[in-house]
Image (cartoon, rainbow, N blue to C red; front, side):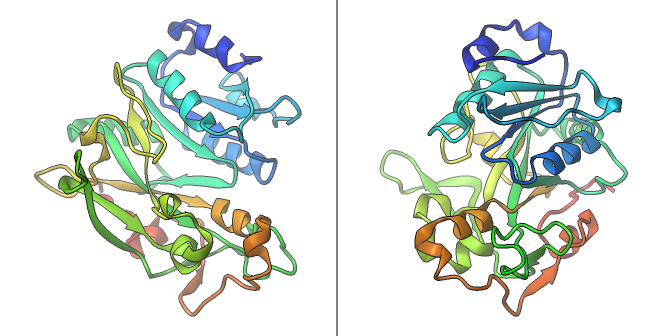
Length: 292
């Protein structure tokens, strides 16, 4: 079912959406929209909501997934669009799992080549966790002359090191150490930080979580329930995932203020991305926790 406006989606009964896991794909432009959708379908999401303006043509779902893909017509680049759509879905499907991403982004979790997202969230719930911390790993083309928008699936590169974390603080005075929460940095946002606004330099995102009554997504990609923002439970390491993304590379090549200052994204720690969950685990960019 398609929705001509976000308000029409808000008005639809929650029961009409069925059961998750759900995915929300924010189509900021048309770049790799089809491949991002194909990837979500391959992971086994039961329903995928594509948020796109009226002028965007959205690729059809594969025959095997007919009826599982829906379009919400909404200005996807409007400030707050992601927050508005994700929070609208949270309110409608308490207890269901939600992933959100943008076109040119691809969710990877441990062993995703052989296991579905439904199997993943079943395991996470058995561990008494209600969220999976995800790290946005920047992808970029090696040859910016051949690929001026920095998007190249066939020979995508990523940074093999240069990732770090710092203590997250909160509270009214900003001096309260948040338990089991860290701010994570790395990738293009770190190497070219002079071109990235400080609030957008973090690479952590609660990209897969269980909806709860009253829960809301905040503009900094954290959730209003602080426990869902933790990278691990108190008793052992928890499973994490990666969102491999061309979004930052594309923005740095599109923005006039950075395009002419960056002739090449490659450095001595660039490696070929093999589109493999094992590679991401070996690089320490996600971990299986107790899931083997």
